[in-house]
View 1 (cartoon, rainbow, N blue to C red):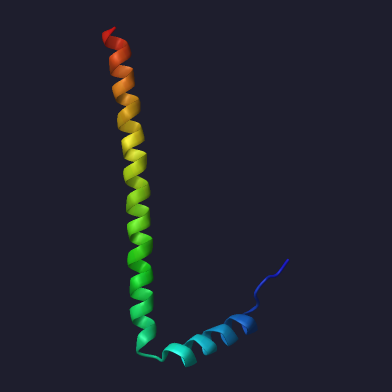
View 2 (view 1 turned 30 degrees about the vertical axis):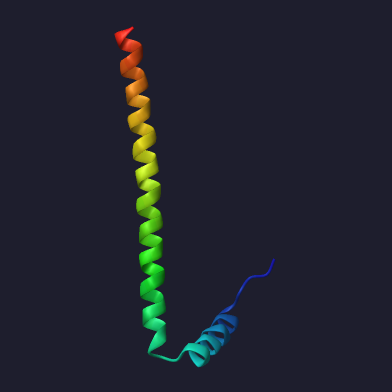
Length: 64
């Protein structure tokens, strides 16, 4: 539908570079990377909690 081509991506990158400057962009990317890592860690934690809960339920059923 609205695919971004290489030309559009370069224009967007140039505008971002003009607004933030070359020194600020690595800091922004570092923050973005930390945010993504934190989100993934949180998702893994939720998955682990769900699996632990399922195991607890199975153990309770065996004990009955």
